[in-house]
Amino acid sequence: MVEQKKRFALFLAALDSDFVKKTYGGYFHVFVSTFGDEGEQWDLFRVINGEFPDEKDLDKYDGFVISGSPHDAFGDADWIVKLCSVCHKLDQMKKKVLGICFGHQIIARVKGGKIGMARKGADLRLRNITIAKDNAKLCPYFGDEVYESLAIIKCHRDEVLELPESAIVLASSEICEVEMFSIEDHFLCIQGHPEYNREIFCEIVDRCINLKLVEQEFADKARSTMETAQPDRNQWQKICKNFLKG
Image (cartoon, rainbow, N blue to C red; front, side, top):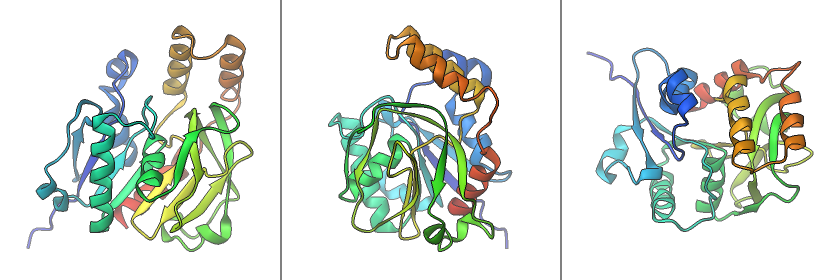
């Protein structure tokens, strides 16, 4: 009997930058190279453009990833409302969903949490976040060794202000109380970007300056965090893959 290949869907909530298109062929390939394995099928749905799978096809997927976005997860644009509706359905189906940044906040919204502008302001840097070890040890996808902290690239102006009742905090930081949380065994949510590398981060900082979204001093501080350190991409990759495929 031929084993069915695993199938995943990326809900892309951001447009591809020219840099990412030229360097990686688009964010879809960034995500698949980070979380995908040989022999799997990954499908792209540009939810920011209103692309969604038919409801009848949701059960064909083993897991879903919701990307970051420049949009607010508490917004009421048609595609955001639709995304919330699809996530509610996936929750009912107990489908595995990995929410990243905007996706992390969308899941909190769907499950009854509160999201809004970050209390301590935008976070744009490489940051060490503290793992809630006692809670993390209960999650098999962390593996045998649960680290005290992990470095991850941060790029957000909103945050989860109040967790849904059913959520368990898995990580926090000095600037953000909810860096990571889980709900049962089918939702894993991360405020940072496990898929980003230094090149993608620096290009985002450049765009933020060009669009006058941040001051030069803020941008310089953001870049300086990556001068002598790197994100723990291997550890994040392992955690996320273990979750999606465990």
